[in-house]
Image: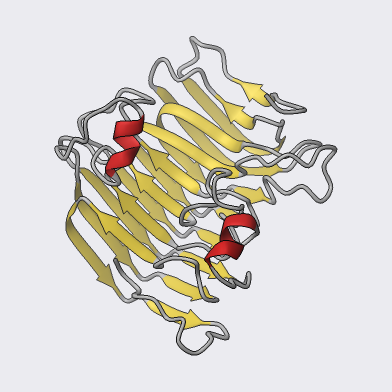
Length: 276
């Protein structure tokens, strides 16, 4: 598909557990770590560093049916093309998780990656479990998801949660930081070049936007939802973004507490609603 398409580690189809600590992962053109996504897969990852390899990386970690813990990990410049052997666009997602159970996401740093950190449960991609919980604490996103729209991740927020469930997904986002310094000019610029994206998107993609489901041959389904979304003690420091910083769709109970916002060099008249 792309030059250098491959992985640092492809977990065997029968493997159900990965314990990794204090390790540097040099990503392949497809991924750093990836699994076969056919059975529940538990992770316990601590202090891993994911770096861009010789070819632009699609994903740092792409994990299907995942549950467990990823903590104190650093993702650096994934999807960047300045120092790679090919110049093809790739997503540059630091993480792309399809949860099959509770996930703890704590103390991680996402620095200058082309794509976003994404939790996705879509029936056209994987089996959606009844319910689960995401604990997302003490993470920082700095200048991520800048890739031009249409090249994966860049068209969305730094953190995208597309994982509603029929039983209701619980999401806690606490003590996190979003930091953008990339200058955003206008919509056309954002479609073609690096641009500051949103901070947080929480959507039930089986229902909204409905064209997502229709394109994949599924009728839009409003049964999946987020039971609770709590954003507590977080900080946003950003230039003007190409979209609303916080976007929610399909959440029953939303709580935002003690949010600090600092806009950098905001031009007159470009302010969008902060929450949609």
